[in-house]
Amino acid sequence: MPLVPSDYQPPFLFRNGHFSTIYSGVFRKIHGLVQKRERVVLPDGDFLDLDWSESSRPTSKLVILVHGLEGDAQRHYITGSAKQFNLDGYDACAINLRGCSGVPNNMYRSYHSGATEDLQSVIAHVIAQGNYNALYLMGFSLGGNLIMKYLGDTKTLPSRLKAAVGVSVPCDLKSACDELLKSKNVLYSKRFKKHLLAKLHEKRKKFPDRITVESIQSIATLKDFDDVYTGPAHGFRDALDYYAQCSCAPVLNNIQLPSLIINAKNDSFLGPSCYPIAQAAANDKLYLEMPDFGGHVGFWGKRNVSYVEMRAVRFFNELT
Image (cartoon, rainbow, N blue to C red; front, top):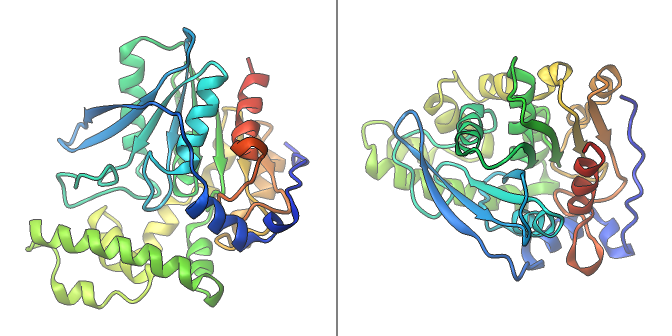
């Protein structure tokens, strides 16, 4: 599918990628959303916490929302999306990935960009409940890569799954990591590393035979974290092996469900190969929108409804 033209034109300040990223991540607040938490036990004995919110009217449509690196189902981009979908007649199920709900998960492993088995478990759980005829996926950053990887890897998708949207998707994980390691992103990478290391220290207390204090102290960058923990803990050789096996870019050609990727051109987290122009051109089910502005999950919108929230609702509604 040829590139989708974008009509996103924010006010002047929000045309700066860093400003929009920081404002949306730190200062934006969502009020009025009521969520109910459900804990789901996974096949390996671990668990996921799901935060549900409902439309004010009966519906057979559900959107499943997936957050980004060190996010959770309470982040503004998740609650804002859930609220907007609820207003438009969709129920919403926001996934807290393993270890991200405020409670440490049970196992040494946690979540990562390619853990499609956990998304598959949630989808199976929702279908087993029998309440919805149409399911939709929306993921942000790491969560966007996760859902696109799931769609590209899964040969037979559930018939109730209708469409997907990914926002600020790091389609090539190595390219995205390379960008995060640059000086322009030092504040973001330090913040990510701080949170990741805090969780890893807690893992060490519970699994002292799996990782040492010295190993944790050797972690200077986000790539080091993936070399020391993410890769080995999830069955990959190292960071580069993890990036290669879990990036969605190589499998985007396989996607057979209408899917929209929205990646801003001024997203400082995304390297050149995170913009899958060739894949979109070759696949009539894959739509790629590249607004000039938006930063990383930093899309502004009037009345505190972001552009991507309205865009996702419109994309899904156009298919029904």
